Length: 342
Image (cartoon, rainbow, N blue to C red):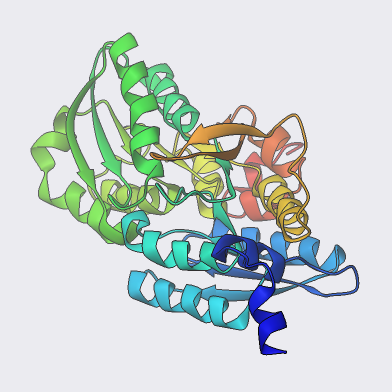
């Protein structure tokens, strides 16, 4: 028996991993999700749609929240590896810190989906997000249309660890050059903490007075900025833009204190990601006209980039309310007299 075993052909580690992770037709697919945090309103919606879609397709989903702690996110991925899940979906906190942990998962034959934020140099099986450069383009164009063209603007960006932030700022800066807008100051809010953006308004009165518009990395930052501007009686006079189409941002748009937000149809993103997770778990190729490739810094990987939409008071009802993203009565809660039909 010993001689027979010795004569059997060997397998490489990669082949063993692939063989180990092949899902039999009657097996329940196990998907794991590790979120940065749920501080940003939209992540809860992403989670709910993804989980619902995956369950409809016959998978179980284990969702974990890292609460902005990269070490905790690494521990969660290690836990998923030990559990032997089929796919791990990651909303990344710090790409550089996760590379080795992601590689461990891949060595075990686990598929990796980088969700909304890339995990660079990791050879993920899919990076699915929105066109982040276009997000920045839409923000700058909105400020230009609001009177900032030819003037000075402030850029209060998101976490410096978020690899989407440079892409957003790249799109923003391109339009600034075209519209002759000067970015007179730029900051980044560690951990996407909105109070950093709010404190900036209080502590840099000279910059605010010289600005013709403010770009905020997301609607949560915009909310704190507008609160600070309100105390200075500047809310509604100084154009402010954000992204994510949070409910409070849409309320501010109809109230007249926020000029624009970028709507990213997260239901479409989460549903598509769940469908891709099932396909990857089954060893099936990712199909569809939206599937292309992108370089993650080292590898060419599968990429899906959905199109964002600029939302102002002119199209909010059509884009946000008609789609069911937010209810009309919630959006117009503070200004019922402005509801359509009144």
